[in-house]
Length: 119
Image 1 (cartoon, helix red, strand yellow):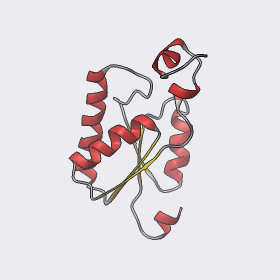
Image 2: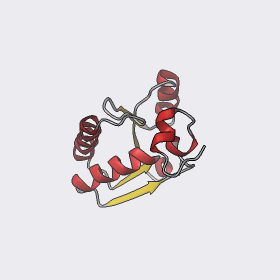
Image 3: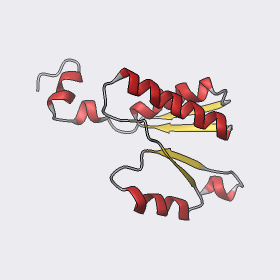
Image 4: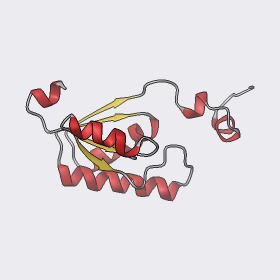
């Protein structure tokens, strides 16, 4: 990992859900500190729970005081970028790979949330 080779301290904040301990161990073996998030629900629609996730991420950003926060996927981009800004992180990078659950999912919830779906 180029960042580690350049001497950077690298942290990952994630839910550590289905892949759990195996993925966490592999990431830690690469020299990355893993922070398990308790509040972030990538498909939930509860605004109070979402605000709790923003507060959790803001607290982590304030604790670590990073120079850069990179957020990947829709909710982490929205909430992670907001949290980093609230915590005064000087640089923030957002990456939105793929179309996301709302646009690719076939569940009734995804279809309802997808604007213009005729599917």
